[in-house]
Picture: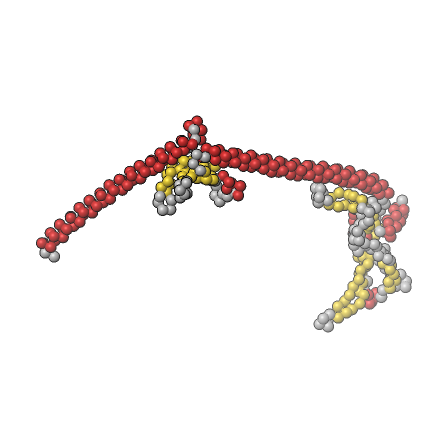
Length: 367
């Protein structure tokens, strides 16, 4: 590019910048003139609306209404003035609306709005209303009266609902207190019944303890656990398996005929004692083996050779009442369940009868 071409380009750039600057300045000035003109138009619209309202509402009422004036624009950009005031929890807007009638070119528009999202109430639609010229004061005060009526109804409805809620709370509280009172009575009765049965059990326990058999001091007896072979079977792989049986007896030898008496035992804590048996054993075939045990007290006896003494009351059981406090207490039932036993308490242990006979013989021999 030649120097002449560069000079021409620079000059054009300067002229373009100057033209843009003047254009932007003219645009700013035009915007300022438009803004000022808009403010003037808005002020004029407010002044016209303010003057019209003053012809219909006396100054004393206007002063207490606290009206402010705003200018709003519709979707087409047309501005119109509105008088805004607050009354009864609602924002009221007063403006002029066109009617396009020869006898009445315009009328008042009174619009009521709540500052609540999705606010709509069929009854509240009566608050927004149109009014002919020279009727603004009358219609506006009428709408205020309707709003006051709404507020009174709302207050009455709120009071009615609050009264209903209060009654529900009181009834619920009364029901709760009644249930607690009944529960306290049932609990007291349950405790009283439990104490009565436990007192009777304690008395029976004392009677049982006083009447319970006692091991004579210093007496000792020899007991024999007999183990013998009862037969032979074969296992899954054909190997021979020796079967053995056990029993308790009072001697460590067979009689002349080869018999020995197996005495009663208790296989389980609360089971009945077995019946005595006399079995004949061949020493060579059955290989009897006696294990001697010397005992001098009930505590030294194996469990299967003694009986637990317990006391109970007919149809008195121990139950957990989950509706009260979850505690187990004694109570009487009309009939015991199929697998239910009366409640009982432990008193002590006594030897089986055949052992008691041996102990008494040993005690007499010592005396």
